[in-house]
Length: 428
Image (cartoon, rainbow, N blue to C red):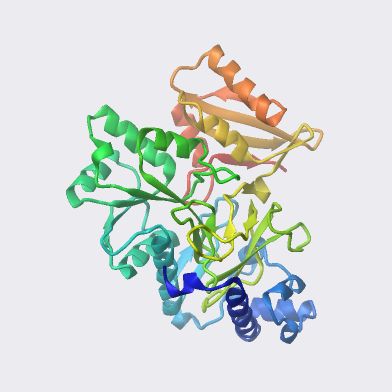
């Protein structure tokens, strides 16, 4: 473990409180957005002494970033080294500008994350994700592995044949990948006689999708991978805006927060911090960011905080797997539903190739759900089975429509961002 990982909870509190005071002074001086916000709301930053005082500050939203994007910039543009952007999954992409120091911080963050998984300089990381299209994460993983002094091979997403050829040719030991793609790698290996169980690959850093449920057990995707391949899986959570990641250690008990880089809260609708273990919106305050720091930024993601010391010895707070996105919560026939519950049921069925969840408003101003699925063989038996599972979990019954894979892919590209989408929101 690194020295930062050995801090006690009291030391972490003192460290974050001191860094918070530095951040507020910096943001009040350098950020047009925060200088205006603190002025309008009558905030005296000198009265914010500790992390516990964060509750007295207003929150920042994604809409603030979209409408006043460059007002968050704290340095002259000549000091910006890299421009990145959010994916735009839930609206217009947001530009996040980084200084040279911010890029170093990004590399340090992923170095800490990789170290938490047990990776060392002896590892070779295969990056099965994009490193272009203004994607911050691809750059972060590359730089983090370089800081670890590990090897890196940039294969990009897709192309299972090329991925396997590269794994065996360079003896890749760690894969950074969307977990559902691991299932495609397994399927390709089985169909083409590749001895994947005896490959050099030992761990997968899973991005973009959960591999655990809210009780920290493996979910359907995680179980299906482990049923075929005894590879170590590590969940991560990150966003472009916060320029930081939460990554599991080998005990898999939630994503560890790097306390010198981020303060995390879970809050209710009006911005009050919730007790440990209660579900609410993850809200972050960045520490050590020069270009575009954020104070109490609402991520829109629902999770819980975990404060028990981890078996690995770290005393940092951890976050649970993301339970859903606040904007994606559906009110269907009097029941609150997060898409992740439906995804889990659909992912558990081997006959389903791909799917899209479409939500719209009806004449009663409530939500309607359509589930579009592409399957290997459409049948009434499969439809009845899916309806039974969905009704058992949701207590309500969405409409299911069979579609061909081309139609599903067309719907997945309906957004303006770089990610294929599985949630189409047509609500008024």
